[in-house]
Length: 168
Image (tube, rainbow, N blue to C red):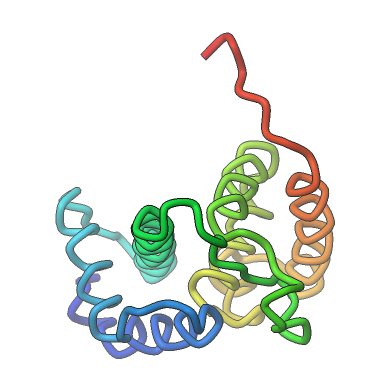
């Protein structure tokens, strides 16, 4: 499966991702192209639709996080971009620092890969839960449980400072 074959879907995912992160300064097309460049840079050749969506969502996440880092560096410590895992709490004050959220998601994926994929696909890629269930070949209820549990775990991780592992 080639990137060109799923361009329209990638553009839809990028549009949804940007809608969730309204403070982003990228356009949908810019986000799609940046994601494509990240994938092409690693010469990734996805085998199937699941692999393609996974690569695209990971690239979208990286581009969004890179943009947040650049914006934060330009502001030199000004307020970080705030995001929320709950669309009904879209108020910026209720959200989390996007860079801290990225770190928490990385920790979550290390503890539970599937939960991390659910958050990454839904939050950073805008993939619907039903589609995530199809892609991961699990029941929708499992995806809903993973999402609910992941939100609690991430909220807990964001309330505690991240202490680097001295062994690494």
